[in-house]
Length: 555
Image 1 (cartoon, rainbow, N blue to C red):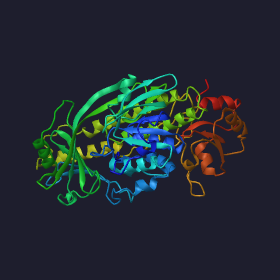
Image 2 (image 1 turned 180 degrees about the horizontal axis):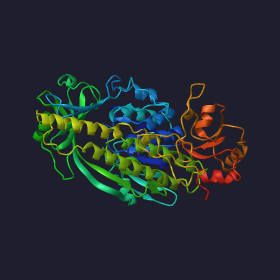
Image 3 (image 1 turned 30 degrees about the horizontal axis):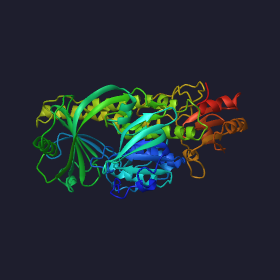
Image 4 (image 1 turned 90 degrees about the vertical axis):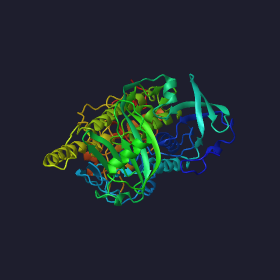
């Protein structure tokens, strides 16, 4: 039997013996957080899918540990916020970012103080806040939630061999890794969430645009239960090491307790570090010998890439298969979760018969610009990380050395704030020019990575407002379209038009002034992914045209 990310039995038995499954709506390839989120969101919408993952689901090096604020808003609608907050990551660990020459005997150049997860509070713009939940903790939460839906099944140790895209179906060949037994599976749609080396993307012939190599970096996880006590720099989340050559490494509290991830940044020139070099790097960063155990070493390439398209027809890509970015900023997985939610409702609508022929085409049109935006910002964060450059005197115990350290620390602390405060990146993405949104001619607020300006303009995330009953407006938006009625305008023409087209629509009437101020119009149509599709102060002159546009069947 296959094993899950925590070693518990997988759910492949739901499909019975090999060969028992002949046709399913959606085949998801890849069981990382994006694939699991897509499978779960489909299940939440009542859509059947099968996820295949070639590994056993075990996480040897967590590739992410930040669950961003928008992803937490999705977790809120999925009902799993409490599970994320209850993950083993300690709630009392300060999230400080500390800039040092070394931990023992070195100098602290600066510190961005950040509250622990237990002390942090949501900003006014959201009912949620970001959470620290590494992949080896987050994936099992997503997996258990996904398989709680009877329409979702997972097969671990099952790899995609190949697939053929036909007019009305996709025929895939998969292989049981343990036995080598192969099976053909027919699906209506296939989605590749299979990572940066995506076989689905390669099969579709989708080019990756951008810079294929930013740095050759080496990550290692080491175990040291008393790491906080062997140095004098105090507790923190991330330590960034700056030497005479510039920023050369980071160490982060990957599980908040006894496991630490060191990243040796490297350069654009390929170089594989020896064990002696890795141990010397640890010794240099910490500044003394100490007892530790290296659990894993993974060399990897930091990239700046986005796919030219995210698929079409019956096969699509999402997550790292669609965009490969530097982890500086923690945007990668969170961007991928956004891909999954955007694609999920479009697949559900198409399979449900009310999605028009242009709906799935809009997936690439909406998400590819967001991917490019976030990839670009992540690369900018890398440049800011290495911005100190060469400072030969930075470790000298001299007056000149002290002056260099003060200046480098001041400049670096100011520069790095752009990466530490990114509400605009996580909440401020908008589907400008989307073919399935109806623009209202208003001016867009600035797209600033640090500052988020809530807006109910079509294409934007529907703003959060607390309601008198304790709910957020975000809690109103479910698997159907939601029509907010915030004044006296008549919603009936849109209700009737949606009924004629079979589009699920829920009308919510609110009289609260704060909501009216935030949404600015009397009628606001919110999509099943929580983004605004249309708004006005009166019913549209041609309500069928509006409904056809937002369901992907209009001009």
